[in-house]
Image 1 (cartoon, rainbow, N blue to C red):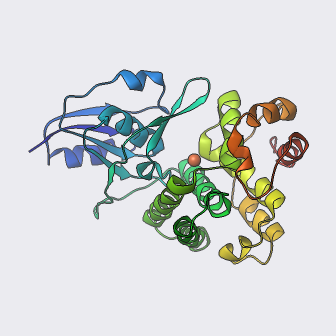
Image 2 (image 1 turned 45 degrees about the vertical axis):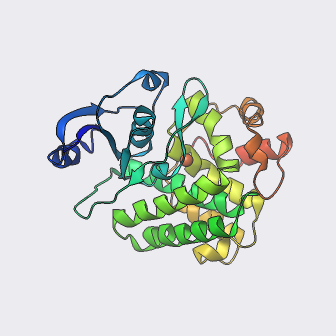
Length: 286
Ligand SMILES: [Fe+2]
């Protein structure tokens, strides 16, 4: 038997205890927030590091494991289990290189995500899939993955299928962005999350319909069974319960967003005026 550090969240503690029986000398680490700098200093002498939870949990496990084996059991659609980097927040968003973990989706895993978490992770995953689909870095492989991800996520939204489908769609979208990297929606989301403290997926959900309208990417609506861009933007807007940001500063945010080079890795260039217009089309105070 191997010794293990099991990284989990409040929601996944129970399942973490369940799998602990398969290891010896187990320690637990509860993640309460997206990883900050302090995670870089954590060392573990265990044989294997296991992360069970959403993006923050899996990124934390990936960072602690270093070169050691890391097993990821994703319970949200963050896609973090598929990327060769982890995100650290310290006044800005920093990507640190990390080995890709071994991904497991156990058959006995039952996930009941709180409504807000479900919405947030769904729109994070949709943004991954859509940004990958229209990325300047798209390859035949990434396009195939992003199309499959969109199909699963769309069916999940329209038919209310099992949460496991949301996770599968999110995983596939994660694989797609591990090839192309994210672009417009993500680039725009980071400064907003940092400035206003709104979680990553919720900011993506606020921004996504406006960027879809601006990009007007011909091949996209049909993947959602929509006849045109306007209908797709409307469908996504109606599927998302808005978050509220008081006094959103469009100009300052636009300047911060333009520092992220990937704002121009989408299908259409964006200048400062376009960006301000896009940010103004989002209803931040509803
Ligand atoms: Fe994301």
